[in-house]
Image 1 (tube, rainbow, N blue to C red):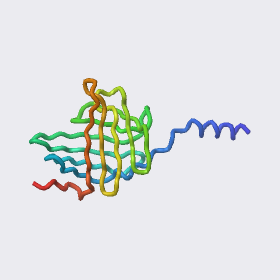
Image 2: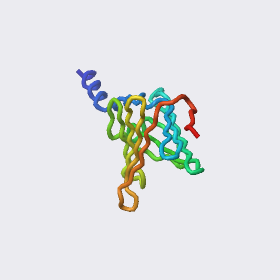
Image 3: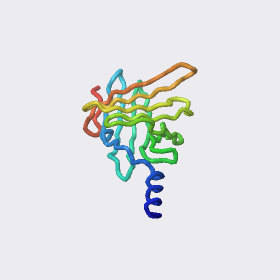
Length: 151
């Protein structure tokens, strides 16, 4: 009897399963609007996926390193744009081809959304800047590693 009660308590307090975000894995390229933006995501291993993004636009280069893993706040997207200190966005919603991460305390963005549609990976960040709703979107296409946009 005690063993059954203990097992039930452990099941209730166990952390939820790690979501399957393997659909994000790969090399993704967006060549829209005169910019070259790429994201690379590893396949999940031991509950961890590692990513990096590189954007070249108007002669300027920017980057972000990030990872997806369980944190003290829950499963999260941990972003370090330009090598800055980590910012945690907790998984708020997920489905077979969609994940939404949120951090209402962050200045911008407060939400990060990824959605897979065939060979496309759509990414969106959104939030407020100066009291105005703002967003940025990317439509990445699956590509061989290190593919570049046409000149």
